[in-house]
Length: 465
Ligand SMILES: Nc1ncnc2c1ncn2[C@@H]1O[C@H](COP(=O)(O)OP(=O)(O)OP(=O)(O)O)[C@@H](O)[C@H]1O
Image (cartoon, rainbow, N blue to C red; front, side):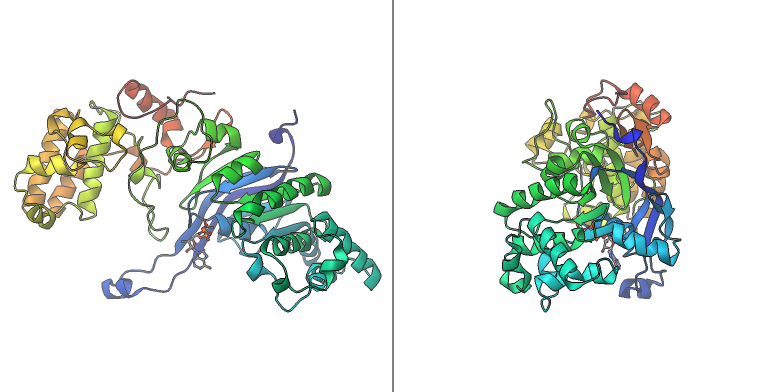
């Protein structure tokens, strides 16, 4: 079989960043803080090969649309390069840019918004031909428009040519948007959630059409979607984004059947209608996606990660480390404080720890005491903490109860350290995948080796494929 890696990339994305400046919010002004830009895309590298259908998945706000818009030059990158067929698109001559605008198109999510309500179907589809000075003569243009309309399933074309968007159904409008993208015979189309606004009953028809058009027009697609079943259905390769970073990329089936990045695991497990590989346990991510204005240090996923890596010297279980680390975060965020202790009527440091070491995770990962207490308490003795860490946690809890959060954090920062917080992981090749996770660093593997066999919810060890 023809392997993507053996072909020349059509699109080469390297170290791509897009930061949006934000006006200063009221809280920043009051606190005299510098306004932070939104780090929408923050260091993405990806190759897209001729004939590929690549999917970009990730939760809302992770930077998918911003990435897609940079690829079609609707946004300029803050940093990094995009090469299309060997040419750097941020540094093109006028002639190169004209050519680029023909060869690269984008289809948007909302066909109601992306079509001009005052233009007929003919005018809409013929417009790119006029802008790109492509086909001279009314009759020739009309013939080309009719041909493309028939190709997208809007036939006989005469019925549609003089219609306005509000006379069409949602599916017909999206087909017009597809025809407008196709009429210039492009090579590469970025499709941003192309069916998510359409009725569920007609989505498959539009997707199948797009697949047919791919071979007919020799297209390369980038599909942006939060719908993972669509990515599985359409895309040979996929990239998973989290807070502006590409955390995992590779063949779609491999990513779904055996996710390597803990975020990928959590993302796919949250979707009931994606068929998962056998022997997969539920992922146990905690917490919410943080703000892209102020992303976590090191690995952006580490505050939620089930597989957070303890330091090499750690003598307890990984699960215990994760609990201790979450306790540190709770103190840092003010969720565990003298006030919260007072309102829960907690005066004993060990009791404070029994509450603070709980994790908001699925039942099967919880301790017995945690399940019995509906997730409000663990049995401190059952958490496999090294004695020195336990002492440090008790000391920190005493500081919290005394209202000295600073001292508590100093103790916790000293006692509970992780490479995940310190360093941003660089993408590593692991079998068919590129993964940005410290578990796949050489160092991470060593750490993991020591942990193999613990009850830490590590799942399958990330052995080389
Ligand atoms: N023009 C802009 N100005 C300021 N911030 C922006 C702009 N466009 C996007 N953002 C911010 O950048 C981040 C990434 O947005 P983006 O739309 O790329 O994400 P997404 O993954 O496509 O999300 P969704 O699925 O909701 O469309 C978000 O925090 C968003 O608010």
